[in-house]
Image (cartoon, rainbow, N blue to C red; front, top):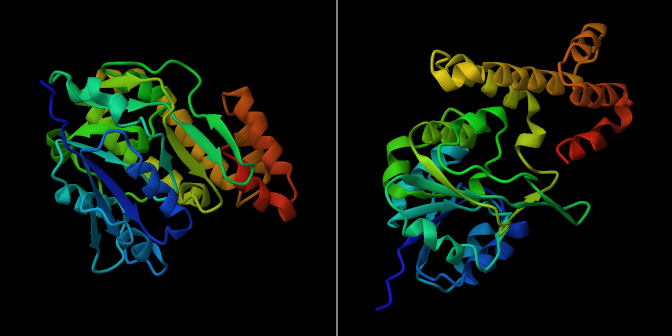
Length: 301
């Protein structure tokens, strides 16, 4: 007897995403795993996003609009309350999936309670260069991954599928604009095991309008506030305190090197413990202001 497919809720939070939205929606329609619903939260877009979405004649595609433009993670929490699926996943309006993505996660859908979520590797697609790049070069860890995550954050929200009961217990912190995904997955990983898939069936588009790349100062201050709020008496956090503080310092330096250049900053850069990143920061520091805007586009590449 054939087992009935479990319902998966796919969340799309969108604000003026018309440029790549149709490609995103078509990648969902092409999924071999067909028992899904799409929860589309239109955050008061002023472009053709709503029209593009509503042209998809499929009852599984459900449109909702916020009363006013709100923060991303507040919008994500609204989307969560609309979901009816046993599992929840996310895709941004400029990313796309391989047709086998959902179908390849049946092992997780049928797993025991010990696994709260699954995640995978992905491709970064650099829009300007028209090139794909593997996001994470190593094998992804399986099980309790908090220790590994604090050393290097190797999860993209667009690769995660999570059990609905779990995600409604946690929710996103609406006070964040950039690090909400990171904060959420750290909290989830404290309590639950993650099932790792090393395939690359998710494509994440990197382009000039990526919010975090254009808001380095905000990124730094959000991570600084997050760091202050952590319990370093926790064994795993205590072990990884140095990694966390190094990341905080790097975010501070990369924000300053793109905005404020002075002698003290050079001294701070030279003191940074990673030689590789120290040289990267120095190179950016000495780039003429006239071309610094070009450098900003490729910092994460």
